Length: 174
Ligand code: HEC
Ligand code: HEC
Ligand code: HEC
Ligand code: HEC
Image 1 (tube, rainbow, N blue to C red):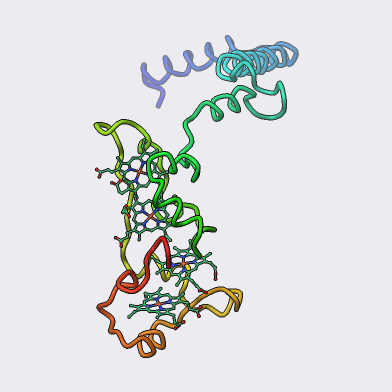
Image 2 (image 1 turned 180 degrees about the vertical axis):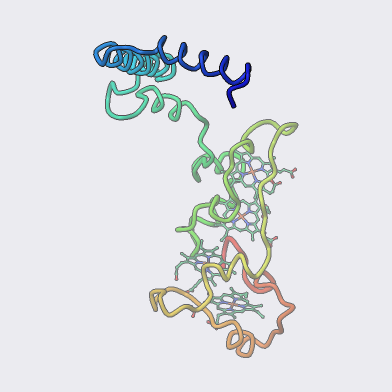
């Protein structure tokens, strides 16, 4: 263990120890410097990343509200349909489905109210499921609301499971 390499290593370790032999006060100063650097760095990064209007009105980016308002709404409302689908709108207005907005059945009309080339087609769901979503008998539904037990309804109206509701009911004038 006391060969040439071993003792040289021992001297190097001692020298290193000596170089770091700082007083407790100096240690403390270094610690403070490191902490200050960390806090300063955090503040710089925070300043760069937090949007300008953050905190103006509350704990959120105030201009986010404007951004959301500027977005095009997905739903357009019944009044916008009347212009091009007057007949459907008039039928619905007088019938039992008057309380059901068009877009509840046909989906959001964003992209549909444009010219023919770019018009988005809306869904036309003719399945039983589309009607039963609202009309299947569930004990939680108000008893006055029109609802059916499918099997009973089939027996009473004498139709089988292959029938669509639309074969007897008009979707707009049920
Ligand atoms: C209860 C669900 C429901 C509501 C509410 C509803 N629709 Fe429909 N609509 C349907 C279904 C189902 C069909 C397919 C009917 C068929 O082929 O027998 C359809 C068909 C259509 C069609 C294509 C065929 C046609 O009759 O011209 C248009 C256009 C249409 N609806 C527009 C509207 C508009 C506008 C409103 C609101 C004023 C509306 N719908 C409200 C379910 C609904
Ligand atoms: C600017 C005129 C216009 C307005 C407004 C409009 N539609 Fe249409 N809509 C059309 C035309 C034209 C068609 C026929 C498209 C075809 O046959 O290729 C159509 C077709 C439909 C269809 C059949 C499926 C399809 O997309 O082809 C439904 C359902 C429908 N519209 C519902 C609505 C609803 C609900 C609204 C209101 C939110 C509405 N439309 C507003 C012009 C309009
Ligand atoms: C989003 C829910 C909803 C959907 C989907 C829906 N309806 Fe309705 N339906 C209603 C409401 C609301 C009424 C009116 C409430 C009432 O009078 O009981 C109604 C009324 C009716 C009535 C008259 C009930 C009565 O008591 O006289 C029939 C029949 C009917 N709907 C059939 C259908 C058919 C067929 C479909 C599928 C094309 C359908 N509905 C889809 C909500 C819906
Ligand atoms: C073979 C024709 C036929 C078919 C198919 C049919 N119905 Fe009916 N439905 C009727 C008749 C007729 C009435 C009115 C007499 C009655 O209340 O039983 C009626 C009444 C209703 C009512 C009102 C019930 C009440 O107590 O107020 C609802 C809701 C209804 N049907 C929904 C549906 C749904 C949803 C489907 C599809 C699963 C459907 N019907 C399929 C003929 C049919």
